[in-house]
Length: 461
Image (tube, rainbow, N blue to C red):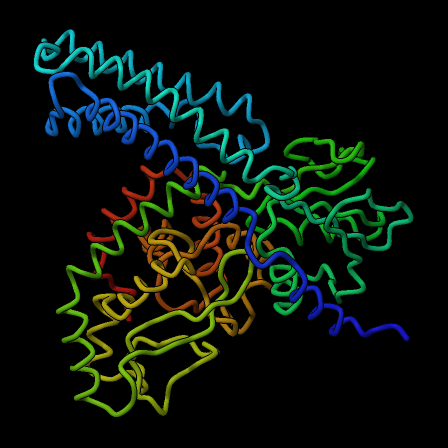
């Protein structure tokens, strides 16, 4: 007896890799960083302890810190911590030795021009660098022995989806039939795009093998994903592809690049963690005062949680300070807030006008559901002119290829507040798509600065 698609879908969710492939690579990068750091520090302390003139703690600590800092800086340019090096010991050893050589050249040049070389023992410097080379090689060798047998498919997750195609998928490690899991390429259905996001969650790439009749639907369907997506297709001209690729001997069509590379996502995540964590610590007294004010004016919790659409069209619970009376709250967001809204409390009105009701979303940033800057996440029932956002423009789903943000390019341009007309959402959509394709860390900084200048806005209510 054939199992229903819902049961197969739940089985897939349970059986797929529990840890994302990106997390695996990040863990490997941290392992390499930690091993190399330990190797350098141990090398200098071993040399320092065996020095003929006795152990000079100050010089040993200073040199190990300088070499380690220089090594990490050089490694960022040589990719000495790349996760793929776990599959190639020879290349791994070449990278660490090249990185150490570059850092040694930088240190010696620095000492020469600043004339500080006389302050350090030359024996300690050269012996420490030689010992570092030995410990770095031993660390990488032991790591390779410990994780022997690792395959490329362990580090990069490629999911093949077949939908009505007569051709068979290659012998891929992860391959599914769309109909088995109830996957239907329908942008008009929030449930369909959410299901696709759940199926592809944690993978690095999606390749779809489908019949020509549904190929256009899959192209649009995949553009909303936050990872590179490809379609196997012999007819390429009409799709205006971003690029062509080869997967298991088949020609593929790249229709979505995921927009942010792995390194870009790492940069953005570190930036978010450092800045949001600092802001939370700095504003913790203000957060407490706001919570007390909300509780004193009306009964109910100080915080309000609502389901929103996030990265890859996967849903998450957004945090906000409650600005409405508890019994009048709108959990689905079916009704936009009006300029004079009887549901909004007096404290809530102040919070909305100053955007202070958004501050708890810093915790969404810390947990990884959101970013400081990105397209604003909307509620599932959000409408403009009584039409759902995705019914107005199917490109709406494309904005979810990056994490939603507390602020964004649309907000600093003044496109905020109630969506009374279709232009209200179209203006935001154009800005969101522009942000995705223009992204840089510098752009995030500019948007954050501009956000501080437009916190008080006529459309904030």
